[in-house]
Amino acid sequence: MDTAVLEQLLDDTFDHALVHHGYTNYMRDYEIIVYATADPRTGIKPAYLRYLFRYCVEARCETSVPADIWRVSLDDRLIDHETGADLDGYVWGVKCHALYPGAKLLPESEETRRWSKALGIDFHEVRIETNAHIMTLLFSDLQVSEVPIGYAPFITE
Image (cartoon, rainbow, N blue to C red):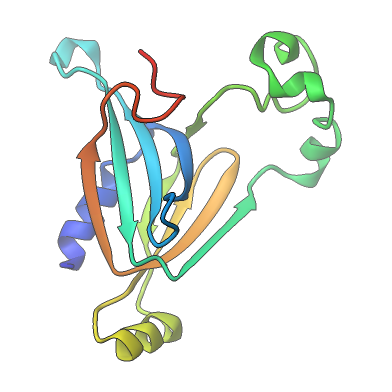
């Protein structure tokens, strides 16, 4: 995949909402579902977009929430927006995370070269940062498509 095209697709996620991420049900590819919005004056309607990271040989996810915030965010009432809204701590139940600072293509690494050589196709590494998680994916190709209402239980509008 052309790195300039890949970088543009990743840049397009900036400051939108990440509503789901994980391996697909067939467990080879990794997907993130983004709720993309624009200024209403543009006339562009919001859309759910599926970023499918194909041939994903490695996916790491870690928290970006500091330990001192975690310490005050263990109350299960914080996993629901309504019951957690007036509590101190991180409200987990917002059902999305801001893609900020967003997704960035990382420079070629020993791991991308090793996988490229082993499989005979190019591999890339991307870092996706939200206000709650940092994901690092090692993959070969990226496909972006709009997903319909009902694609997943969280897409209901």
